[in-house]
Image (cartoon, rainbow, N blue to C red):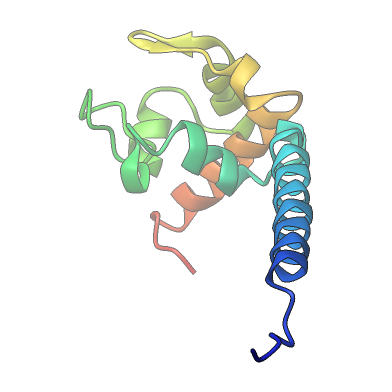
Amino acid sequence: MARNPFNTVQIAQRVAQRVTLFSLALIFFAVLTCAQPATASSGQELFSNHCAGCHVNGGNIIRRGRTLKLAALKRNGLDNPSAIAQIAREGIGQMTGYGDALGENGDQLVAEWIWAQAQKAWIQG
């Protein structure tokens, strides 16, 4: 009878160890990624995560007149990043505030990004 040069039990154990180590590394990376404070994000990331659902490309799917376009911002007295940050933090009308979700200084980051996009008519690039 021919002897098998490969010990399948040892090979299976090595594979299982490597899969376990790889899985633990992935979990560790995922925890680190999720644990990052909102202030580490850019205004664009915060907007994408918390605002873009209703304000796609600076529009507004709930109330057409409450867009983030430059003319609408000025018409509604939101003609600077500080005013936009206050709305992002505290909310207005049907929109609830996102202060907790945006994190420390997140309201200012997203407001500055919104203001910059409004200046460029929401044309990316």
